[in-house]
Image (cartoon, rainbow, N blue to C red):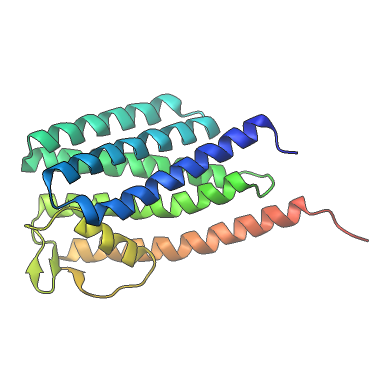
Length: 222
């Protein structure tokens, strides 16, 4: 029977996954007005806090994760009320660093020896979506540094909401690639290509680890 600690971890994992999905679903619906952007901002806060708590329970990185989350939330708040290009660059840099740190921590946790539990399954799904959010941050960082790094049907994305690149990130991560939004600069193309590689390798490595963990936990029969 699962321990109380295991059940608590599983609940945290479920909440993290739910919050990520809520943010992904709300993003295209609310990003076009000021009130909607505020809701998305709080949704992102909830995701950052949930990711920090979930990672802190599984690894010994409570303070670094908390510091990253707090700094990221502060940068997002300032940029929301006083948007500017330098603040945008700082905001997306910190957010990308946070998602990168969290992703490395969760990937390390999934690589530990142990049984395949519900917690590991939920974390593996959340991590896959967090990778999409990591590249979403990187794409917006590139667009903030060099406007026009991505184009939508031959139109620069400078005037589009930042969330437009979330669609590009998920489409690239899954190697779906509709082609309606494309990277227009060499560095943007390389970053997008690396996301596609990361998406394929993540699935292959994670499935292999989960299968190995399942086999090691299954008793051999004579």
